[in-house]
Image 1 (cartoon, each protein chain N blue to C red):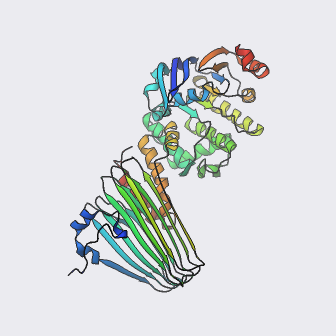
Image 2 (cartoon, rainbow over the protein chains, first blue to last red):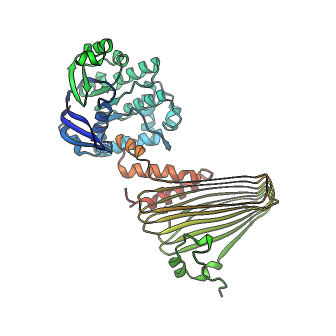
Image 3 (tube, chains in turn green, yellow):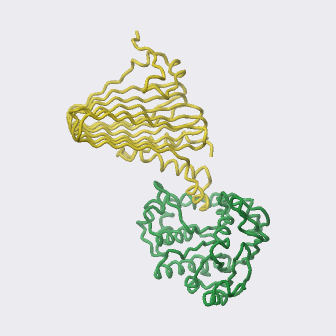
Length: 252
Length: 251
């Protein structure tokens, strides 16, 4: 589904990704772990097409297309979702308005009919319920006045509404307490893994520091990102070894 | 016959005006004051969209009687120099509410010039102006607040924010406060900035195309100016007129 080959990227003059290669197959949840400064967030931002992140070499193929040739909104319409480590506040724009514009823009780009206001609200209510978020919060301005945990939960509600084929989740577990972590983890499972929701055709790249989210969203594969490259790929047991022994011991 | 002569840029109130456009308009236009008086206790609201392909000068003199309330909301989206001037005299306990948006490109100057005189006690005024410009255009807000010696317990506020969609545009804010009473509240704020790129990327990452993202962000930005406009239909008319001007703006 996603194939990254020898990717090099820099921010300003500083090279961050230095020959990163990774393959994520459909139906797979692939966890990326790694020490601070390894390039995890840079990888997420490059995949999302954030301005300021310059690709200097390599390629990214997504569903048979050159992902890097697409604008950020075109990537979203192709089914890519980027879960932000720090979701952005947008004063003056409500979640409902924002997400309806977003969903209908994606549908239009795919040649589908737009959802009416009523249809959209029904969908939003459904997905908010999945994440145990009050519908009233969706009527408020995008992320304004939300706590860190609420922002992350709102990200998952957005993911549920937009229903992507591929999600890159950048430290979605940071800022969550234990209950919220379970809810968010269960949300990821329901939206991206459940068979009745097309799970076998979807995939997730889950960037995290901690085992605790992986206890809920059981990854199929775990890769270690260090020094701008994937240095090791294994099964879920690799995450447990990291948790027990630390990055230095495992990557030595 | 006109008694007026054309001002110059040395006049503080005309400092950022488009003098060539004013000359095209002619000195006669300076005489055209619209005089409006509100009786004590009266409440009146007016919302308008100004601007066309020719220069426009709108001069309004508002006398607001004791305990009366005047609300004025304006979208200034002229295709040529467009200036709205308001002189306000507040009686005891009167209120003046102003919300204005200047929006546009094409090298045009659009401006609001207000003078609010708190000559009697306990009068209040609130002015919110938003300016969105690009392509060499200029948006100005010259706001003068005068609190006379008898204007105790006056409460006057002025808030200006400029949004420049590209570097070759400008916004000027000139707050002028003249206070001769000692027990008053006067607040003013002014900022000028660019579009929030983080917000724009966030929207695009969710599938919103760049033009729609810009429209949503501009809509949110100018919305402040019309928050106090309680007539929803009028609020939408002014917002739509402003957003229509945004079509064709540089991304």
